[in-house]
Amino acid sequence: MKNRFAKTIDINSDLGESFGAWRMGDDAALLAIVSSANIACGFHGGDPDIMRGTVALAVQHDVAIGAHVSLPDLQGFGRREMAVTPNEAYALTLYQIGALHGFAQAAGTRLRHVKPHGALYNMAARDLKLAAAIARAVHDFDPGLRLFGLANSALVEAGSAAGLSVAAEAFADRRYRADGSLQPRREPDAVIQESDEAIAQAMAMVREGQVRAVDGSVIALQADTLCVHGDGAHAVAFARQLRAALEAADIGIQAPHAIEHQATESRA
Image 1: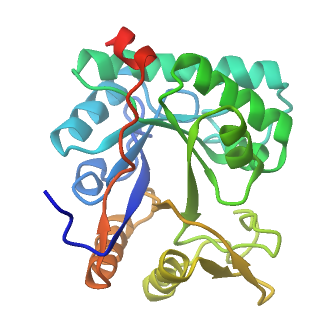
Image 2: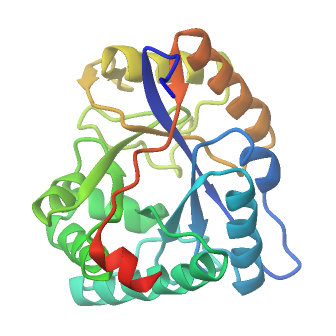
């Protein structure tokens, strides 16, 4: 069936981050809006029961499933940097992909992508050796998996060098520094609170391939996937507004095409 939109963009969200009796976000509502789900694998959020349930919800909504791999920092929600070696980054990435793969296989589906979380994501965006270790772990598990990384970052570079398909990620609700990195959350005003401003930023990234940094400079970037955060009080309402705005601009919402590979089929 031909797509009725002039172009498409993926919308992803970090989901399955509840654990035990503690709950975060409205995953069920977000899965009715987004096209890709990055599911926590137990290191910064999530537990076996949450992982299983989130995979089931993603299957129900026909949303692409990815492993949201993190530093082992449950108390800090994976947002505190740790001095991990490339070998350690490789091992923790492979471990978490394997954990989520088990739930996906049991649900009769497959993983489509991998996206690092929080501090690991930001560290890999600037450290090519760390990024290469993550990319190698993804490739060794399944070369058909796609690697999500910050647009113009070392992670995207490393993924391509490893022979992976990559998705350059942009953030609707985060402010950018002049070097293309995200303004750290510990700094004031790092997260855009006004929905209209965040939607305008997303539209500029998707339609014009650029974003305005906090110093007023304009950064060129390619956006293959837009992240919307699921942990805010108005996360669902914002995701719904963003999708509506994109579709009104003749931009459809669709996950990147699945990549078939022998390694994936052998694990099915």
